Image (cartoon, rainbow, N blue to C red; front, top):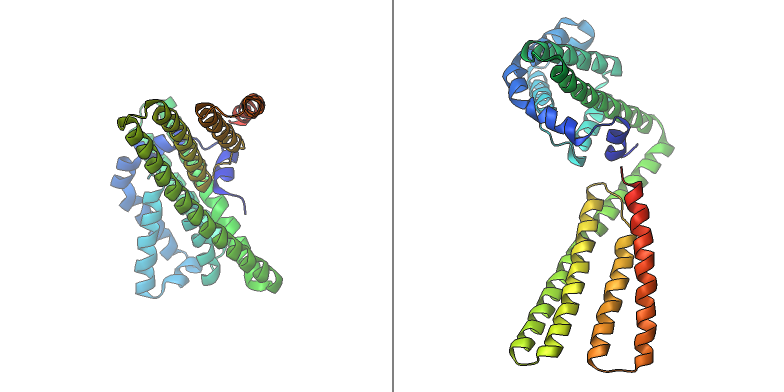
Amino acid sequence: MRTFKEIKTHYHFTAEDERRLRDLKPLMAENASQVMGDLHSWIMATPETARYFTDEKIRDRVTQMREVWFQDLFSGNYDNRYYERLIRVGQKHVKTGVEPHWLNRGINLVRSRCLEILNLHFDDGGERLAHLLSLEKLLDINLDVITSSFIEEEIRTYSPAYRVKSALLIFSERFSQAMNLVLVLALIGLTLGVVGLFVRDVIEIFRGHYAEGLITALGSLLILWVMIELMSTEISHLKGGKIGISVFIGVALVTTIRDVLIKTLKHENPETLYYLEALILILGVIFWLVRKTEDRKEP
């Protein structure tokens, strides 16, 4: 199944769409009971769907879950947790034996009622159309994810080989998430260590070691900058972004610069410094080329 970021990109679902849907939240909250009431009436009036809700407790629980789903359409927060909730909707429909046809019909009814609300609320045709298109995109994304998860869950139910493959993938994903957590904790620990190193260098300045303290403090600041970049890259990765190779080249570049600063302070062999300076030049050029390529690839 595709990643949520990839799905949103294919539907051209942008931050502007998220803003428009978030702006609709008060309006749709006022009309939520009407929309969900119409949906419930249709479900109970259709024999093929009403048979799933003969138990009153199940009917009340599912009604509440539908209301939460409708409110989430206008939350403005469409992250991986939202994606996972949609996947669970599809999986639940397979377990209860609900056909995708009825799910599509239900969302079509919600779409129609929301269109009526927008027509009554917006006098400006252009603004109404923009909000409608944003809502259409999100409803289509909902259908896409729910239907895809429905199909995958159905295949998993009837295919032993697919169940094994699915279990392996789930284990791999969870292991990867655990390792990401370990990596984040390690980066936090190392960043705190660098902060401590910088504090120690500043203390050396106040003790009268001005030249050595300033140079080492500058080097510690460079390392701290690298740690912040690594943290930002990992956070972006956890949110579904791509890892740029430039950040790792930046790590090598900054550590080499710090090494040159310290060796210069200690007046070490000039030939070694020449090699390091040439390395800084090469790394700088590579960093510039890679960063330029990454910027060009960004949408």
